[in-house]
Length: 174
Image 1 (cartoon, rainbow, N blue to C red):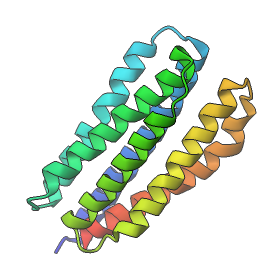
Image 2 (tube, rainbow, N blue to C red):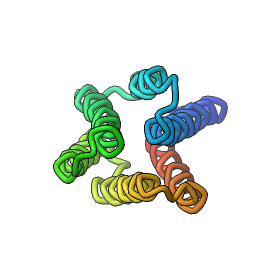
Image 3 (cartoon, rainbow, N blue to C red):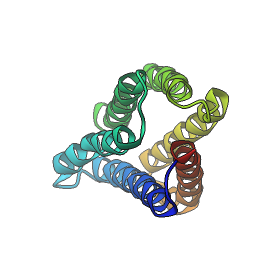
Image 4 (tube, rainbow, N blue to C red):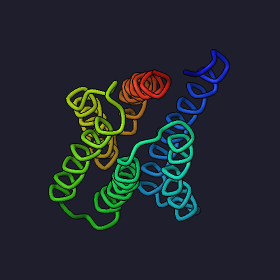
């Protein structure tokens, strides 16, 4: 059992991670779409974020399944980067990457449920697939030159990230 102060620290760490993840994902999307200098550095920052979550999880979880979860989270982040690159740089049709992304999402939800019985696999799957949908919709809109989509969709992605953070932190503190 954690003290109230420890719980607050866990919640703060999880919320900060989620905010960083959202910030760097959207910034990466925008930079790739705009061919902005410094995109490689932003990509690198985004790809290191699962390490931050790994530190948080390792500090509070004692599960044999934790390593699988961390690998799934890292892979999902890498698929996202590849997806964005494919949409904006390769001009390809990323349906195959989307299937990989969704498959990894299902594996991540399953790993979360194994790590902590407080987490429901179906709940995680629904939240994360909805986030994937919103990010894909944002990529599609920006690709078509509709930058207003960032203003329209970002509040929904932010709210979803907040909900997922709450669910994650609550499970960690239980």
